[in-house]
Image (cartoon, rainbow, N blue to C red; front, side):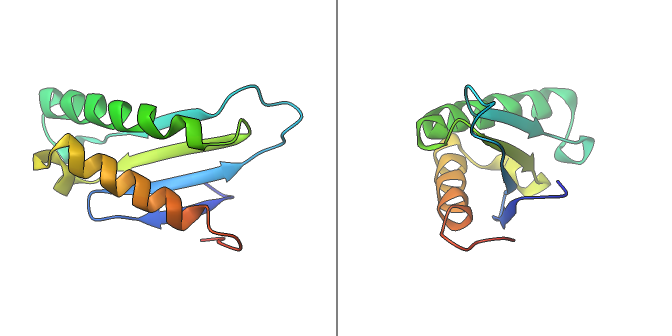
Length: 101
């Protein structure tokens, strides 16, 4: 992402872009799970776990915010609970006042 804030966690990188409040109706979430994460089955499993974690934090996002989660290969073998904790920790870092990158 060109604009916005970034938080690096051990198993993912989180990007948040704050858009225009006037035109937004709900926050959006995007996932990036590249081939470096593993086979198609492993990538799909990772996507499902990240989607589940993102669903839990959606209420804490403003309607104008765009969240992108990029999975790292190290996240392939961790559980959903740890992914959710990392996502919440990364969002706390990104949403601090004055956080740019």
